[in-house]
Length: 275
Image (cartoon, rainbow, N blue to C red; front, side):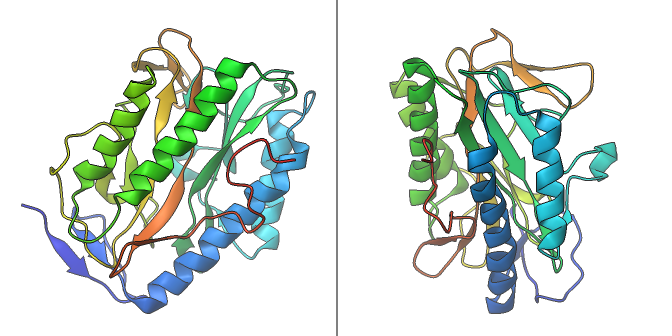
């Protein structure tokens, strides 16, 4: 049985399986953290070019996070040694920054999570590197539409499964695969918390959405089949069939009438191309 817990903005919270319900102060904290995440992704847009290394991107993310008065939540998380994840082409998620350089035609997901005043602003966005193929651009467009269709279902009285059902229906109508191995998650004071937000689900199932819930929606959509595999580094997930994969992520809060997106781009850079 799903349990909900009303928490105050300064209350210590535990990862105990309960779904946290937050008040106005917490919404304000998430707005600030989410805005910083979005500003960082906005600033990366002109930088994502052929010849730039993923390590250089990580350096910029770390510096911008620190300059914003925050800390990168991924840095040191379960031994992870970087300030963001950079996932290229067939990498589904958790790509590790390195001296690898971006190439013309790549599609890239950059995932950032500044921890600002105790609140996590978690967001990722796709970027197009140089001259990208039409099939890759379409995958990116459909993935963004999947995210927004999922967000449309995020309102009081609906169920978590309604989000996944909307995403799955649209992705599969375009003959794409929806990744099952990774999902969205509750967040706030905690980086990862209940509930899990599955991106392929049956409508009307799962926990009820209630005002005050915070969570991410972050569909990973493959050009080919859904299955992924984890590489030996223990982080990098790739498509099993080596097909391209795309992802977008927003952090949201359920309100009395719908939801608030905390990580919207202040510059309107919601999906590529950004110029």
